[in-house]
Amino acid sequence: MLLRDFCRRNQIHHRLLAVALVAALPLAATAANSKSYVVPATPEERQALARAAEAGEPDALYLVGALGIEGKVQGVSRAQGLSALSRAADAGHAEANYLLGVIYATGQGQPRDPQAAARHLQVAANAGHADAQAALGQAYLAGQGVPQDAAQAKHWLEQAAAQGDSEARINLGVLLTSGGPGVADPARGVELLRAAADQGAATAQHNLGQIYAEGLGVPAHPQTAYGWYLLAAERGYQRAQLGLGRLLLQGGSPLFDPAEGAAWIMLAASGPPNPVTEAASAVLTRLAESLPQELLTDARERARVTMMRIGMSSGQ
Image (cartoon, one colour):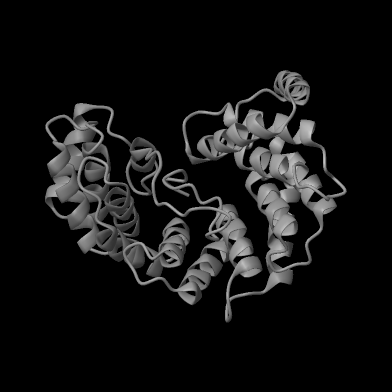
């Protein structure tokens, strides 16, 4: 698989995750994985690649383009790299179309163009490119560059999942669990998420926690939600830390533990600037106004001990 990290395909339901086709773009890795060429290391190899590209050979155009936009080919500017990629894409090259879809979706080095991104992803997806299928499924789910269409989202996530794309399986699981008429299949959705969670996927563990906490497609079950949230939270997953904290702060719940809940909120709020950190900080502000000082002191100590125990190398 190429460009595995171009988007955070973690959660897709609007209450579980905001879908965004944005993230780091390892272009050099893409080029290095070209099926027909290796990254040219000698003048002779560079000349051979240039001749093949000038002759319009799609694999060569793709590699020149991918390397060119990274500044890895002497004498090839970013604009020339994009032009080479476009020529390869016009010839039906799946990887070139996928890479252009990523570039237009993320706006790296140029304005974002969701419609162009979707067009290129569609070509690559039609050619069987699993990453493009997964990305196109998310685009349909979010209405980014294409009309919002849960049925199309399900179709393309199914295609990617059938090829073994683990993130597509997680996203498909969330969609099936919390989707609307025509796409909902809670039993299968939970099955897909459970399989990924059992393999240690923190995203799936968090999703299961939220599904059982809120009763999304399944009966609400706080104890089950707690177990899944805790697994992801102890791996440093911010969203799970926030969800776990909120679960423990629910008055009237058999799990009600304000000190422990506040501690997890504190951990979630200690992350780098992002929407999860902001949400956790807002909860902390309210807690500071409503909880006794001694309880907050206890929570801070619990957070300190937990942080030392689990470490905080985490994601959202």
